[in-house]
Length: 173
Image (cartoon, rainbow, N blue to C red; front, top):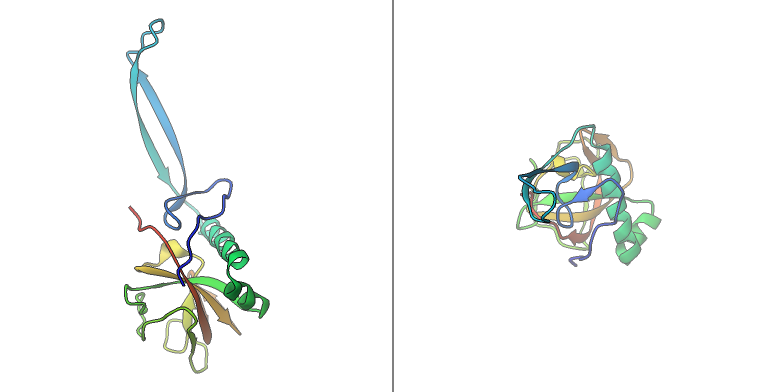
């Protein structure tokens, strides 16, 4: 299932497309040669945005986005009610891991499990994130992580992951 819609309206955020670059910005305009009394004139402007911080705003935005889909999709709601942690996961065009892992293509409804011990950045972990701007891929998925979760360096790791839905997104410009 591919879900469609717009992200929630969160004060202080701007987003490009459904998911993408999240940041705060400003715009300034400088008029030149404006004649005060005739109503005509011209000017130019430029825009600039940059971000700083620890990624907490991006994670907050991702949580709000995920909550929107919990409200829309029964699979997300059921996973959350079962105690799962909802997060996002990037894949390549074929649905395979693309941030250092390998594996078979995923699809909506797939439940993946690996053997313990849970060890992030290894074959003994299934990953996800709330920090979507720190990872890359061609397709973005909403996933549920079950059981013990280890968080480190902008990612989450668990022994069990369910693929709930594919999330539309716009690539960064």
